[in-house]
Image (cartoon, rainbow, N blue to C red):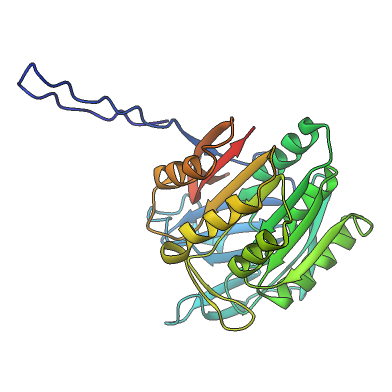
Amino acid sequence: MASPISTSRPQSHSHTAAVVKPPQLQVLTSPEWEDYALLDSGNGQKLERYGEYILIRPEAEAIWKPALPAEAWSKAHARFQPSGDEGGGIWEVRRPLPERWQVGYKSLRCWVQRSTSRHVGLFPEQANQWDWIQEVIRSAKRPVNVLNLFGYTGLATLAAAHAGANVTHVDASRKAITWAHENQILSGLQDAPIRWIVDDALKFTQREARRGRRYDGLILDPPKFGRGPKGEVWEFYKLLPELLQACRAVLSAEPVFVILTAYAVKASAITLYYALSEVMSAWKGQVEVGEVALIETSGNRLLPTAIFARWSA
């Protein structure tokens, strides 16, 4: 998937140009969904099915034309109409739709519901990562402590817990933590060893380092911009390097995995590759890097949603 990088050689025979070996870029998809489907996309929107309900949400990456006719789009139960504010807007309900309903992915279950933003409590494109998290935890064949930062409604946390890990889940939103705990109960994992923490991700990780707590796995899903519970400001480019150093300080002597995902930022997957490679340089392992995408059922297209880098021992 990687594009070749051309290197020019100087005319002088006394110097040889370095040959840069680019990382091999991957595209992660999640084809094993039953309760979710990307039905179509185009004109800056996506048509999605969550269980038996169909939603229309904004999607900046969908710059092409829809593959399905307007009639198919008219069957949506609700459409999110963005306002001028970033992330703001209102839901336009077109057909009877419950306040919330359940969907499942393999052993995991979660609540889907309309929120004050376009988000519905689930990022279905991350299912590939949930599978990978479970695989590396089980392959470790030993107790694994996991720290999930910016954990949102907890699907990655539940995937790790289902594989046998002890998980600390951190998010700045008390509402998201409550939602995640409800998903824990839905998934039958109410007895799983999960700590739910409402806190600023960076400050919490720095305190964990001072307390001497160590983790074998890290899940990082930082937003482009956000605020902590006490008004702390998160800015991706400004604070990500500091967060990565804090994460390095809480890694155990024999870490198992680290995942870093970025949404809606003007960054390349190659940027994440070098950032994570630097953090994990003291340990033997491999770094995979690329894009996360949804498979469209109507037009045979891939809709890119995020970039990622992940390290495994």
